[in-house]
Amino acid sequence: MDQHYPLLGEHITRLIRTLVAVKGWSMTAATAFVAERAGYSPDMIHRWRQGRGKPLPETTRILAEIGRTEANLDREWGESFLHAAYYPDAMALLIELWGTRELRKIPCNLPTPGYTGFVGRRKEIAELLALLSPQYAANLITVDGIGGVGKTALVLEAAYRCLRASTGEVSNRQLPTFDAVLFVTAKQQYLTPGGLLTGIMTQPALHDLFREVGLALDRHEIIQASPQDQPLKVRDALSRQRTLLVVDNLETMEDKQEIMAFLFRLPPQVKVVITTRERTLYTPIRLEEMEEEESLHLIEKEAREKSVILSREQALSLYHRLGGIPAALVYAIGQVASGYSVETVLDKVRDASGDVAHFCFEGSVAPLRGKVPHALLMAMALFPKRPVREAIAHAAGMHANPLAVEDGLAQLQRLSLVSQQDGRYHMLPLTREYALAELAAHPVFEREARKRWVEWYIHFAEEYGGKDWKEWHIHFDRVEEEWENLLAVFNWCGLHERYDELRIFWQPESKGGIEHVASIYGYWNDRLTWLHWLIQASERRGDWTAAVRALLDVGYIPSPLWVI
Image (tube, one colour):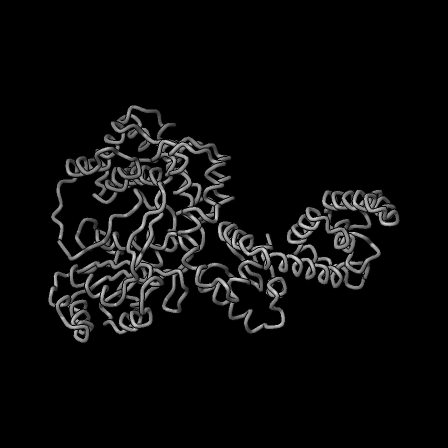
């Protein structure tokens, strides 16, 4: 896969444009100057500006020198430029060109990030930093999303940016500054490229939060205080300066409501950021899966750092089959670096008993087993395309209890296991893989759910298919919206020799016949596939009437003029 460095290209472009402003040159003259000093052609400089490839370390040094001595660019540009160019000893060169910097020391216990460079999420980072600024009154901010979607990484990136601005390491007036940056986590497991690591084994409670704050601020009187006095002492300690307090993985803490009540009552000079898998109403930032471009950029970065060679097709396969879940993608590249093939890694990642599934879903799904939300989650996995609520409820066997269905789907949404838009429900590819595994682990429920699933689509086809031409375009449009789900039903019925059900769908004389829909909307390959299946199945059963009708249907080709 070709390597691209878009951030590096942006920095080189800024260098040349700054030279234009400082020297009064044209873009052509500035590019030629940089090319001559670097010992390359202007065309190569243009390629670097496009992010296509990167200069060697010795050339990177020359470009940094031009930025410092000729363009008068600041230290922040130099640091970001060297980082984007993967310069081997960036700090030494920064000190050589820009000198040392006296940093203000502030209380901080942020953990080391588990990444070498943050990728994507520009919109969410900008939104979080804006909410952290004094101009916004909100002092309780939540970042929610499914496990592995990058909540902690996002918050740590924002916290470190605020820390560098607060200590004076970077000069950026747009970044919020604090006098203390504190971090408290309840994370019990960590998904690394090499596998799953276990952290805290017990559920932290409010007194654990107090203890961490006391240690970070070096306020031992907090730790020694009685449980009754601790809340007041912690509130006083936090309010003595502008404080950023990160509470990571709230959903695994004991006494969550008590913790939230304490955080809610903190004074306005304390900004609290909470990461949780459970959706809340406190100024939420919701993380969904990353877009394709960002995901491919992350795959490329991880592959480059781990010396893994991936083709464009392999990278796309990872994205399409795993979705834009950063933890799953990073884990997958780590496994490929360990010697596994991409195909084997995809199977490992999608294994419901594997590390990724356990990290992303087990903590959320385990408490639901045996309850309505679990049944709805398993039923929803039957549908490859976003289903409507009525279809999910019927497949789960709960169509007679709409209030329980509404509550159950709401709980799945709060846990970020499903999302809802325009009356349809959606789950991420990796979530569906896990839900299908849950379905397979409950064979009695699956057998009944599959039966109800087919029944629902038979009733659906009877209502919107057939030969009733009154407002056929409205009815047939509904069938087309469900075509991908209908194909899943056909495939399952065919695999399990459900002849009677498939006859209902594909025999034109039946009320549920959708052969006309397939003809009008151009699903001719699907139409021929299932008519041929019906012919063979009819012949095996001696149902010659059905076989002849299906043969006649195969020979029928709709007129293009009539279709229009």
